[in-house]
Image 1 (cartoon, rainbow, N blue to C red):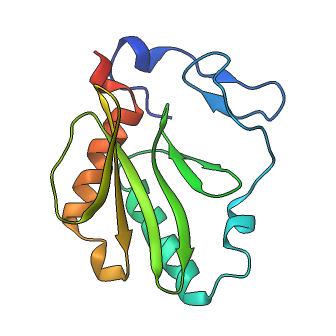
Image 2 (tube, helix red, strand yellow):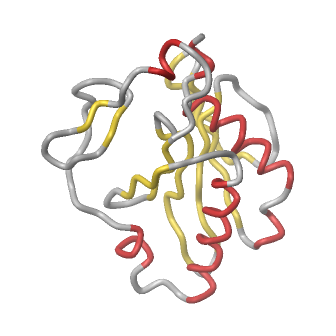
Length: 152
């Protein structure tokens, strides 16, 4: 894992003793479970799986990530989860990125502010063409939030 930056981004990640998932904060509340990307994509069409894989590839262009599959989504984690695919179907995928600022953009379907430095930006991807340089810029900005660089 890329350990760039200082302070928070150099602390060792805490691992849940029950599910073995890693977290930036000790005793982070979460739902323990054994989930896989394969489970998330089970019974999805070839087109839906290809869209997910294209999105995952775009995320990985920002830096080293760990996959954090849960029951209803797949999170992408640097130190913290900074992006996720929340749903994938034949009509596209629903995803979000966490940014340290509110970024007005008509492509976002909703923006939730969960703290002064954490804003969840929801969006949809309907085709490979939607995964453009603009989306890459959101993902890479979110990656720096996932590395906790905004806390320096």
